[in-house]
Length: 103
Image (tube, rainbow, N blue to C red; front, side, top):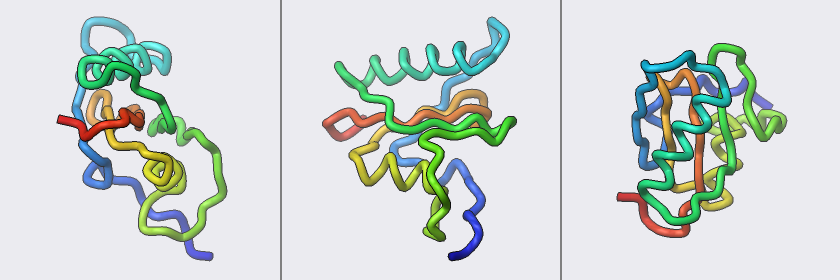
């Protein structure tokens, strides 16, 4: 088993970049902004995975399997994750399943 690959924004499927400047950015604020952006693109987006880059936390917290992407992202994509919301340049990342092709 190899080391976990380093994350980059280019790995994200159908990435939408969101900027939050008008309030302090913590996980809750980032998640709310991501949910709002996802709802603008799909009627019932389902959050599958997330990353808090500064703290190194992610969910689901699965063991690295040596793929070419971090396992939280592999998990989301393998379960239909087709929309990624990057908040403040990747400070937080949320991957949703929309059940449709993202625009």
